[in-house]
Length: 519
Image (cartoon, rainbow, N blue to C red; front, side, top):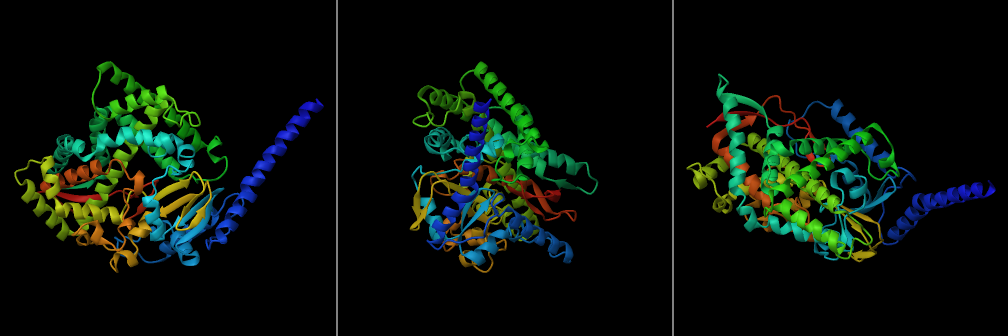
């Protein structure tokens, strides 16, 4: 009995010691190390970090907005209302500062020189933070969006070549076919209205469209087959956007939200496995799904390169996690960007007219093919400006997997580096006095001429980990916008409420509602 008590007490002592190190000693040593290098930040609570202050600042913004008369319905300064701690701490502590989300340290970087260095960093010592595969595991797992080291390199080698521009051009006909199906539904809704105009809340239609395109292009199936997967991933995304990253042990607690997430994750994994088994029965198709399946087999046979001895991943998990990543990234971000672009063109009729004139000139006979993509200069400028004002991803996140140096600053292993995309992309010092305004003309001579520091434009990320699907996304955005402009004239409905919301991505909080007419 005494031995059992001794063992239990010893275990409790070890746990208490590790908690002391993690919650007190390590954060203090990290702060002191960075302070000697001129890096400061708000003092953290030992358990919650700076989360209470972040929530307090956000509440202040909400209270102020409720007490003030309603301003112009469209204001693009949403980063300052959704993330008020970012500009406040920059003003207080400088463009590089340290803060904590729970026990996790974040080096917030708005210094363009350090952003450049991150973009040029090629070593695998700078990867993705572990919380993406743990706290957000049901959404990302160990797929290409969240893995690091040789495992990520193996995944990138499999997935990226399937999304190169030459492959994407072969998918344009498929994009056109899917978009025309949605366009015909909108035409039918207009034709059933006596006034020849329909009020359409476009968001779900665009999600279904982008889901159909990614499913057919990458997995050889239609949206209907993967509809449940897309829907359940959307539920997980909404649930996870409400959780706080970094609070120790939070993801293990059987809260109502966590139980829902665990159940959804189990269902999604089962559905993807069924799709894989069905795929095995129909034989070999040279698409992304096939490459992921072959890559998983190779990963399982050779131990995943050099990585799986320390980071094991089964064949099933490799396939499931990467399919989840592609479903999420391929559907959600594209649909949201089209929603924002149509909202901006509805508000700015002059740019809508310019884009339509260009589309009519390029494909006036109603046909659309891959050769036309390069000729859509004005449409491209509008897409680039949309991604500048409303980038789907809010942060570029990296984690130091070893002690590293950036801008002569020693960054300890385990430090998370956070680059706030919207603040850099709306910085007047970089973009000029109209940085908070919609002005696609700034991209007339390309990204290099649009901004003082081109590295400050990063809607697809930066460096070695830049989005593998950026060519696919740009082609898809051009196709969808062009075919809509070719068939419809649209304006904002009086019921539209401009309310950008953070749900892991930046999306229209109450949707985009348009008044749509046939041309």
